[in-house]
Image (cartoon, rainbow, N blue to C red; front, side, top):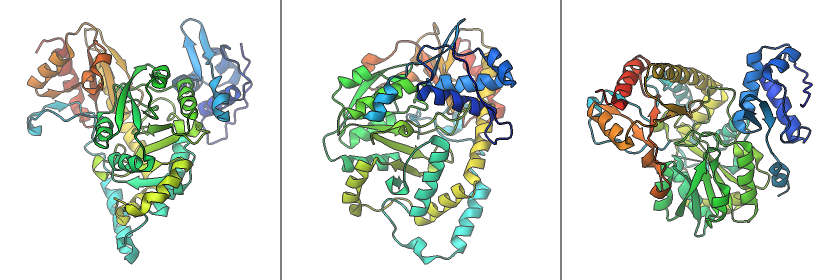
Length: 469
């Protein structure tokens, strides 16, 4: 067993569980903790450090979520195999169109996109907008940099470093009105017949965008760690599109071992890249947000996509892309042909929204609101009398409901629709139907549901699944 000697600072602004997490992770990455080595139990470590057991539990859960630790039932916690780490150092969600039915006729919609009905920060947005327009700065209405104004790109750079561990400079960032526009620019930058590998099932909107742009798209099988790298190797793909912090639609978190395998795959060829779509990483309900894959990249291989549509509002249409330095040079060669798709006014509003701390306060408020809805939904499920399994509930604004023995997925979806309830079957998100799992799986979102409606909605959904309605 590895003996942990951790000097905790009770006066530090950093929570105690983060100090424990940082120490253990650091020991592992320095090679001082060997793969397969057992850690002290949470009870033993909490007693030794004189902290609550829940504090140690939170640190261990974060390390488990990121794949640094493995848990073996009845035995304990063990160090994962991170042998690839040194090798790498050397070398809008996917909601489909909803049924053609009047919105007014729907009782409950377990939508996978959208925000809480009171979620948009109207007062703060109005106040900042007025402040920006009161400056009467004529340059606000002139054509600007095709990548976006330096001020907002700098604000985004600082934010994604603090919150996601993304390492970049403002000149690597391009902003645009939605990820589809940024993927179009990427198609121009790559300038060759690109084969894109996507996890299957996947985010259908990105899949359809790739196809419209002329990319060849191949679906790659998944396991619980994400895209299977051995199949990726055989696919002839030069770009892998992944969502490591919260895969849509399955909700999986890609552990560090698989992330390193992907980076190792990309490092084998000059023209290989990974697109990391970090669409909803702000909403995590256990521990802190999972660090971005881009932060592990030592070979300049990760193209990072982020958006404010999920955290503020879909109508904002404000996304950004962080290019590797090698692709930044290619962008410089073509950028004169493009104009930025977001007005300078909106850019300045977003810059102020981030820099004055309003955005992070908004995130904290929404994170608490969505956590409350999620907890209420999970609590309601405990009243169900049939077998079910929930996954992906620790992040994002939807969860995955597995229903062994509940009948055919499509029949449940159609039965729910007849009772004015919209739920979404996993089968709709597969690229290759031959890879489709035959189990019955529903995707149920909670962002747009009113908290007061959740008990009734969950009761009706349970009755639909049991075919009692």
